[in-house]
Image (cartoon, rainbow over all chains, first blue to last red; front, side, top):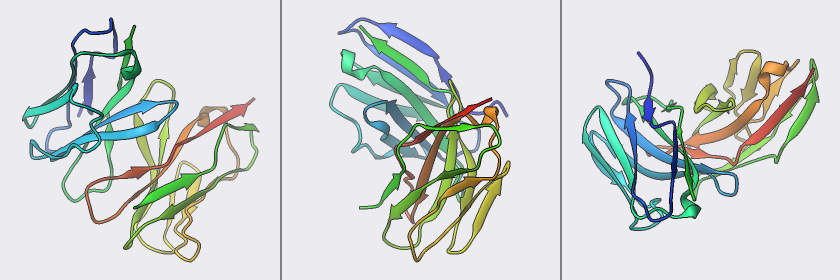
Length: 113
Length: 111
């Protein structure tokens, strides 16, 4: 298996633009998590899905952030409009049912200027 | 709520030195405990785990013992290598679906 796939790996955009981050989980995994990592705040859970349904989005910082999972093999995290403080590395991770282990993707480094 | 506290870094060691990274936790119930490692430019990956008290997790020369009486899960390695330079995260998972991560400890190993 190729593991969790994220795209793009790097994104540079200007403040106010819409940004869409993409994630393909490992086939057969039922849970998908989106995290944000910064030096100041560490690793923060934004939202997670079970069987494509959002379960807990309490970590989403504000209404500018939205996430979808239209099917078992694809999820997006959208920021509209983007702001410089959104600059971070965004990870998605997937987990098979009954497992403790999270399988992380390589991350998307987002820079908003 | 559940939480994980780990020692602040960075930790700088010479090759072949002994490593300890401290981790303590607060949790209701009986959590499973983990150490994840993040190499530069990569996502986190599971290093080892322990699911009940007194269990010892081990992998790649690293080990950690689940100590319920001290609510600790310290990471140790007898002889570090330059290739061990990374950020190490202690984490816990209770009956829910979330994993709670510590702040991470950066390790630098000098040749």
